[in-house]
Amino acid sequence: MKRLPTFEYRVPRSAGEAVALLREHGPDARVLAGGTDLIPSMKQHLFGPRVLVSLRGIPDLAAVREAEAGGLSLGATATLAQVARDPRLRERYPAVAEACSTVATPIIQNQGTIGGNVLLDTRCYYYNQSELWRTALGFCLKKDGDVCHVARSSPTCLAASSADTVPALILYGAKVRLVSAAGQRLVPVAALYTDDGRAWNTLRPGELLTEVLLPPPAEGSVVLHRKMRRRQAIDYGFLLAAVRVDGDPREGLADAQVVVSCVGPRPVHTPAVDLVRGRPLTDELAEEIANRAAKAASPLTTHGVQPSYRKKMIRVLVRRALLDLLGEPAGSAAGAGSAA
Image 1 (cartoon, one colour):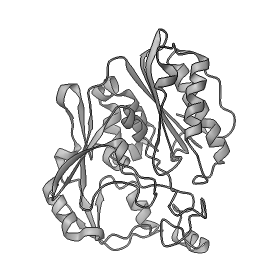
Image 2: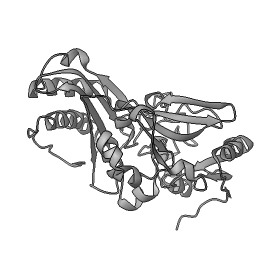
Image 3: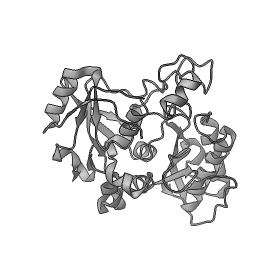
């Protein structure tokens, strides 16, 4: 049995108290929300915080509320299951609800949180292993080593963003509220990530994510979520894609965008407005959009699945999603993996 390292457990009763603890303990502290990723990582000795600041004692952070002009506020500790079954989410932002429902298993969805998913640590085949396994390898650039085994000449870590909800949140234009002793700021979800899998997010020291803000849904806009993993449950995805189209697919589109994740530290956002403006959605146009998304992304050996296969599957997932808007069959993908 893997044991947790020793730590002090603190349960603040307000966001202000939590921020004060983060400021007091600095890099020795980590925030604990659902703990579904943090606790296993601590058992693997990827993290060894001296203080865990639990957010479970702050009820306000677990609420899903109406926001300005028809938007929604998702408290950072609202569980993935809570978000997935909220009727307002399912009606206005169905791709977010769908993304939450494809995370791992129902047990994990009832424990994991929306804030924790947005801030999910980058993952890699060479990093998310036991300490014994990593010792035999000689460690890696992300933890205790000086070489990225994904690309040995890379000066940065290439561990990949694997958060299910992020592609859809980006396409809905979501923002997060970050609170610290210096005040608060709103940051687009798309601006939260960097190209280095070590320092992969743009949070400042001592900042706490308190809510995810979804703007009012745009009229005539549809967002779809797609995921591939080896098994339909348990596994992290080895490919995530979200597709957004604006306008009538049969009469003529005004815009189309794709976000692909699990291919690097930062999700890859590919606009396609120049391809679609005024054109009805056809199999040919779906293929053009899918090809552009695949060209923009460069899957590497961060997962136990061949990069060439994952590259091919970007085209498959994006094309499938687009043709689903027309209610047309998109064919099947050959090989390992399953789409959710």
